[in-house]
Length: 306
Image (cartoon, rainbow, N blue to C red; front, top):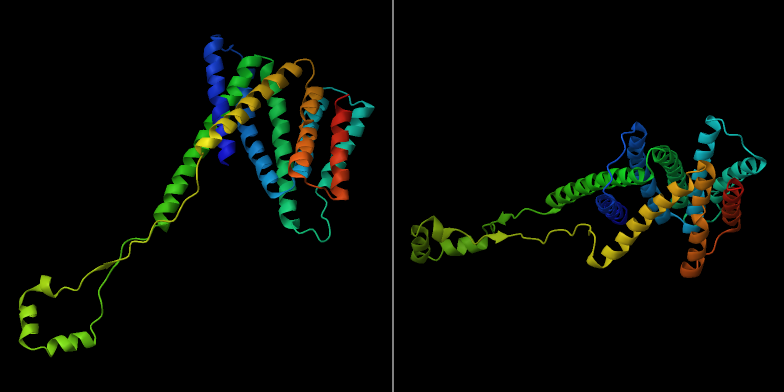
């Protein structure tokens, strides 16, 4: 959640800086405001993708989320586009890949988290598909300002999420921090010994309440640690995540100027990079069924890109 929120804030700051340098006012076109719901759809989509990657295999989750290209294809069909043979094959392969990648494997130790990860990945795919469509429609008014509007809306929503997280953290801290309690030792044999001491005890009693008061014992336990925020060493990587995200949007809009569906499908080729990095850096191996699902999803992306 920390990476998600702060990367979106970084992308918003970058968009604001670029808008200041651009120094060109936005056009008066109602279609440009479609970038705002695009940004609001992109934030939960990215959150679902991060959640899926946390709970499941990166190599399985990324191709499932890549079927987001089916949404722009469906949008094109609703607006008069006709599916070619490769588009039909890509649609079938995408659905098959999503099914096989999430297929339960007997004896799998992480079966339940794996299922939830694929549900989140499918939700991310739907969110990304909506994001592609809305951003493309907004870019018909202005390519630059569509990216800027989307990033500002996404960053504003991220700041609201950050504020809610801060309030919840403070509330949780207030509820978990124990209040100081004062206890008084119970009277026992020591009290009888004092009464048997004679005049000395009477002198103590005559000294007043302050002298006879028992010493207070305060319970001051240390407060419970709360979740950490953005550390200093993660500032640069998180900013790079936001910057590359914003530049990817600009590249997508430039590619989608001619046709939406091919650009959206080619943009969904990122699982190939994820697979290569996951294999080379994390040394993660896939089950055969999941491998077939990954290959089917990548085949779907390749077919839809033709």
